[in-house]
Length: 427
Image 1 (tube, rainbow, N blue to C red):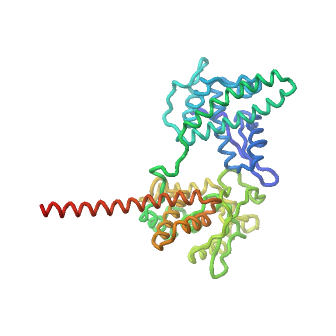
Image 2: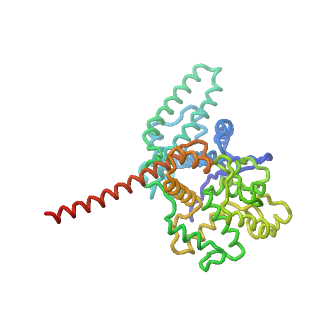
Image 3: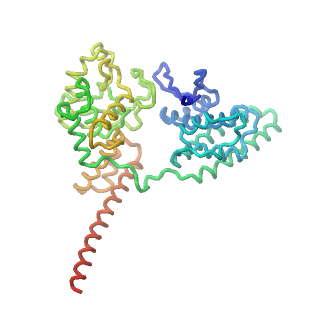
């Protein structure tokens, strides 16, 4: 029987609509004190977004699983000021490169005299950027939590000095180990791209409700048709689409628009989890005439027949069928899972995020064909995508420059082949 993870990152929803994740022991359902204090008093206090808090607690989960494997009590170490020695930190660095499935397997193989994990070899590992992030989160947690303990020793200068020395010795070992890990680099060769044009054409065709290869049940075909068209046409994120409310849609005039809003504490949203948040800035996006017509048809004829919508309880554009409740991120995932499994010719990784990349690839091609300057391309892409700065937009520009460079190189190769062939004839 597969070993169950003894730790869970569980979402809670406050009365004001705010969502907050907590690291919880599965056996009790009670949040662990130290991570809860760190996430609320330190990370939440500086405005860290809930999705980021969730990911950071997932990193602390690795730390606590490592401690379970070693038989170590993290809170006791921090209270007593014994911290962690270098060999333990090296062990921790090793484990931070593991996937959770391998950690679960290690828990199954744990024995009473299990003292080191360095000799175990996982089946696979996480990328160096993820490993770096985990270690950075753990160091932040240790630094903040130990600061709290240190502040309580101010009335005892000798104990305070000893605790601080041990703390500094522990923390200083993390810095070079974190620096030594390679941070994610958007310039890397092999950066993910969108769908090939022929695949995108195939996808656009097959999602039509009347297409013979449409993989969906008849009652959900129109809604799924609209969902995927919005992903393709606007390049929005999954959480952004799920957060669109009826008041955000303007499809009664000559032009159709959808406004993407950031509502992190929306009291109308009863969904828990990290997939319904909007990460990017608010913006108003124009729809094509066909998609605006589909939005209007969905609201006026299909959506209004669903139970929750008919009662006026559902405020969101995209709803589950047949209940009429706000659609969950997992249901969006199931739509794309059905596409991947049932439609020949679609890649295994087709997803809302891949369609976001596809939109950016199409945008780059359009900018190229219309001679738009790089600076305007960056500004327009940043605005449409809702990014708060131009860093992400420039990463796509770098990819466009790389593609253009390869096109020039290809022409040079063809020209050289022609010249060499002509020179051989002359000889």
